[in-house]
Length: 356
Image 1: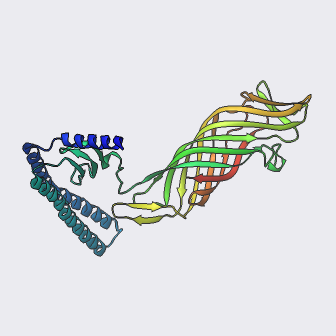
Image 2: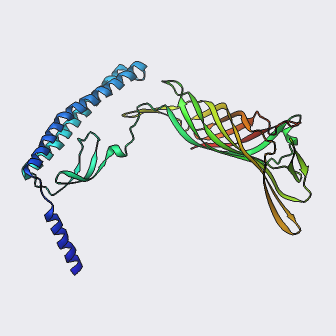
Image 3: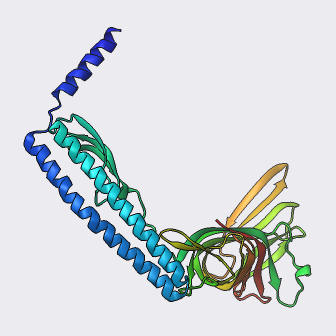
């Protein structure tokens, strides 16, 4: 109990030591507030001019009719008039408070709506901010017309190879065991000013293409040649993985929904069909082979990081189709998997893609 009394006494003493406004301080504050009252009307008028200008642009583009434009202008004018009335009243209340108390306000918590930075929240002692938080510090300006969006791209599915002179049904690689994974970032930009039916997509992706040989085979690098051979022991796992960095570019087609808001408009792809076609180019970051087998009762895992004569330059074609952010995805490498191979093999992938 004694501790609480001590704390309370200390708190009262601290409050008592906080000086109040001097006469010069609060009169100066009043003059500042009066100057802000003059700026309020100018700010709101300038904001109204900008809104009317934006409405006229939409009218010129044919997005709205003259009757709709008149209604929007009238609504904007009423809103700005109310803003002036409310903001002037707020500042006048602050002036009245200072004059009535002759500046003797120990602690004042303010929401300074007349600040050039927008709303400012904080604690003022003697009219000077001890702590403040401005809306400008965290608010991101909303663009009236946003033409570019970005997405996290994740794709995965089946992987295999098209071998020259062979059907894919005769592929030496397991259909279910050979898989790919892709993760990257893309930007999507609307091509035309007043329509969103055509978009230009570009970005970067990391591709991980895997091939699992069938029939107990593994890859052997013999000089400039890489071929499949039968392993001496029973293989539990045999997999070749190629890691690539590529830069995809697509033209995307499809409808979108036009959505108009108070201060901006957007084209939405929500529940809308999408189709894209394009290609990619990049480099091979590395190739490795994993082998798992048992020898003399010991389970052995070999991770062999070698060149395996895989191509350093990667380029190919890709396409996707689907709804919103869920897409069927296919890609085909135009470059052969192995350099200087007697029989060309080209990587092919089919799976799902998610634009998040």
